[in-house]
Image 1 (cartoon, rainbow, N blue to C red):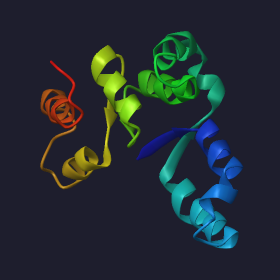
Image 2 (image 1 turned 180 degrees about the vertical axis):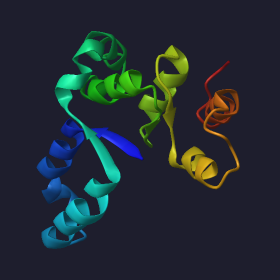
Image 3 (image 1 turned 45 degrees about the horizontal axis):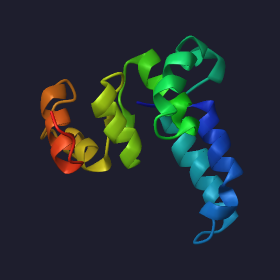
Image 4 (image 1 turned 90 degrees about the vertical axis):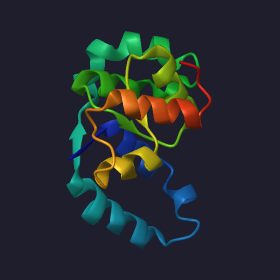
Length: 133
């Protein structure tokens, strides 16, 4: 099961025009509502308020708009799936949350790496993103 914050759905819908450059809006909303949303556990923004201050403190180092995703990861103790280089780098630098790129997620899904093997995950990410240990 994948988790997201309701803010992410709002962001997708707000930027639908940009996202629909290559597909029709009808297809976009059909995919979003019939394929994506049913696979998500959407967490209400109010549920992450206890983590807001800490997450904002981290996100201000690279992108203040990313704090809700960091707060959600901290609350549910699950990694963030992203290809945002800064979000990944700062997860490795701060060790307050874990962010995975698609390459690592695919390895987890294929059974090549266990999600519980944070040492191996972080080692691979540190090498790929040139983050010293």
